[in-house]
Length: 410
Ligand code: SF4
Image 1 (cartoon, helix red, strand yellow):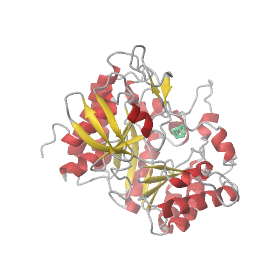
Image 2 (image 1 turned 60 degrees about the horizontal axis):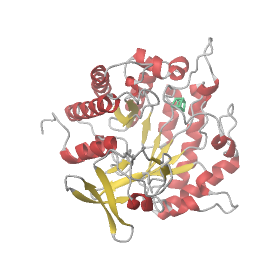
Image 3 (image 1 turned 120 degrees about the vertical axis):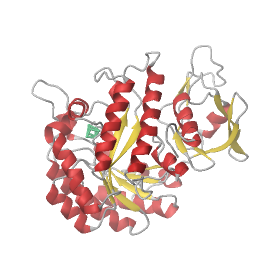
Image 4 (image 1 turned 90 degrees about the vertical axis):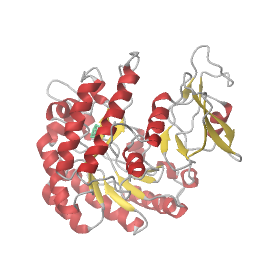
């Protein structure tokens, strides 16, 4: 099909991602059994509020009948709401009369469990997003500790999750060490095995904070991939979501046969934007070496197995200052370039840290996201590329549209 617009299900998902859901008691009840949302529902002044409290817990992921999955956003202005209950089923309703059966991704049983020595499995460096298990035993990122000569931070502009904090402490992460304590790996392995036995996991994604020495970061991930593959066997595919890695280490990782894909996140297209949005990656690896590493990976794993996560919308932050039209044009130029090298970008919707109170912000962000996704779908088709479900399935892509579009136009 000529892609001048989004196919219907992707358009519906985008509508729900941006416009969110109005609070109902059914939505509140779903939060009791669903995977919990880290961001609560915030009632606006004057909005009907059956809870009597300023905020209410929300479920994290809403799933449509065909498996399309998206993050729940609360909004008192939305024309969408949910009724029903867990036993009889939930329905998504629009004020115009549309009604669709939906469900909420449940909190897996293992996340309430504990390892044999009593450690809560929720604290063992494994989490689950739809059909994807994420393994992150070293969340602290050295870029948070490597300020530039004038005291400027080298963390990525959008990042709040890489700060060395209680999570890294609980996992025993020494910020200067490549490896974690043996007990951390043992807890991770026991938790991941339990999660795989419970079912529903199709892919495993290895992530972690970056190290300022990319060769040492490679050693950490090569070792982690060995350990995770030993647990997973052939029960799921595994992706290495490290930073870019030097060629000799990439060859070693590939030769071990432990990972099916790699994903080194460029985050944004063009060297000036990369330097501005990802100053640590620019300082310690560099834009050109990052792309060269992705190209080496294509030579090893092949086209369709090498990815780069991108943050669609960070370009609208005041520190970057692009219009949505400039951001879409730049991102599409990057998609064309990367696909021509056999590298597949995946665009996650970025929710702003600043600027979001501007009245036009959300409509600009939505214009960018939809224009980018419609244009990028055409680029993927032209290059004969699609998102492999051994990397990301539509049941895990809760902040992206590519998997939904590829399914609809296949
Ligand atoms: S590399 Fe960037 S995005 Fe990743 S943890 Fe470090 S600061 Fe955050």
